[in-house]
Length: 294
Image (tube, rainbow, N blue to C red; front, side, top):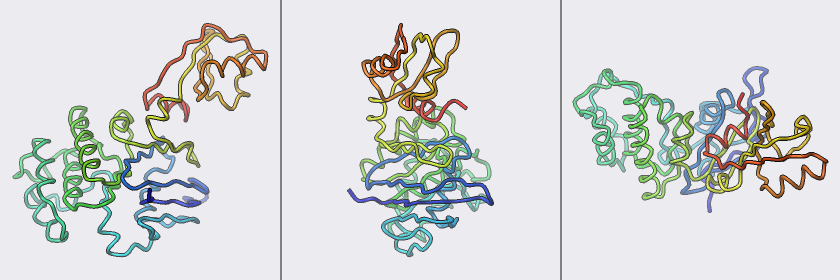
């Protein structure tokens, strides 16, 4: 499988503050990949580097095999970008802005644009200046879909939408990307939406990628255990057990280990655990388990 995006040893600073160092990941063709991370970990920075808006301190990002800071016009036409729902020309109506953009794209498919507008029950005579932030972001996305790009890069694509519209849009985007074999690289602060949409997750913590894995594989392996433990302070020495916390005699840990493996490694270190409860996780819970609550 070809990689549409490759980031190799990417290092970036803002002044003296290191955002990340030697960051490596890829986005395979035809996959929907979600970049998950807390605020300030570098998600939007990565999007900006990918699109040539920022130059990293070192390393490189490639899209379709070309350095992202020097993309050819042909490659730029393959990429549809949404950054925080930004749309220009807010004095235009829904219909006017579609006609305006269509003149710049030879493969323009206006049916995709109007299909999304109809799903969101947006009046084509309405001006963008009269719309909410969430509605404007969906207009921007409709314009991107009509461009028929091979790669969609969407930063906080559901920002400003209420839960019903978010679910509607996530299902629409999922159906569109899979039926058209599009590659999607997406960020969102709403991880419940990502679980419905993405094939693979890239989980970013401060300064590094913690994990890149298919969502189904992550949720089949990663779990939370709660138990009683006689020496909970010793759990901090287990690299396999993440973020142990003890409250009122009950200890909680996150791990890729199964219950038998958990018992084995604790017994080997003379830890007595009992009343074990094993819990399977949502993607949001797994994200918190990997990155910590704070």
